[in-house]
Picture 1 (spheres, rainbow, N blue to C red):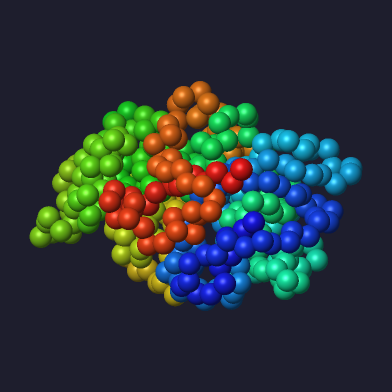
Picture 2 (picture 1 turned 45 degrees about the horizontal axis):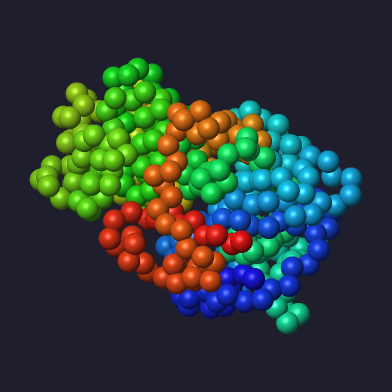
Length: 371
Ligand SMILES: [Zn+2]
């Protein structure tokens, strides 16, 4: 069974789907938990026009169902974390310590087929259904390339599931790129949705004492308080610019700034609010495909560092298990990001413009039992 997106803007439909056997370098997997995201809405917000029909989904906790002979790194029954970033271990990016953007297995949201033979593994009545970022986790069973599977240290899989994309991206971004040097450091997060609160969680475990949240939705402040955001700025409450407000609060600018909204104006704000000399700004979320940003070059010359990150600059095999270990060692709190559990048959309804996010002001991480 899979939740199929037949048409733009229509609810997903649970369908019987035939899954073709995996060729070499691909693995057949059973999904235990997945995190629903309205992928279509995300793509449209970035100016993309997806071609239908798809099986979306790029966050899940899974179990290996079958392995082709000769592949020894995984065994049937292994718990794994499929991730849309990959590591082929062979290209210049994979060999570089600085990059996680594999040339061979680079993500492409426009291509709905598998890399080996250019075909889909999903069929309904003999007609192919596209894969999404070659993961397609809104399905009880799927086929993925071995290069996008991490084998994390053993932990509760429905919690560790939260680490397959949305949550580790900002956490890893903060840990690897925006390290807070002293306990006095200040970190500002733009937007206070789940992704941004994960950035705050990353800042918390690096020891930052001041975490400031900027959001125009005051309802989000209540949730954010539980996540160690200790100061708030609502731009609507001020006549002056957010840059000026933050500069006054922090004696010249914040030390680290994380932008997780993908909004181009917020990106500029995030860049222009850090302290000269040592400020670091990290951009996490993907903006609209036509978005263009503008800032004064002096901002860069004033020794501010601007960093872009893809999946938090986290490498699949070497970095992601470390994030899981931090959770297992109780340094990192993940339970707070698991907001709901629904059975698979209610899955399409859970994706509709939902009451949950309206109520809390947060994008929820829902966990769906697919057993
Ligand atoms: Zn590679």
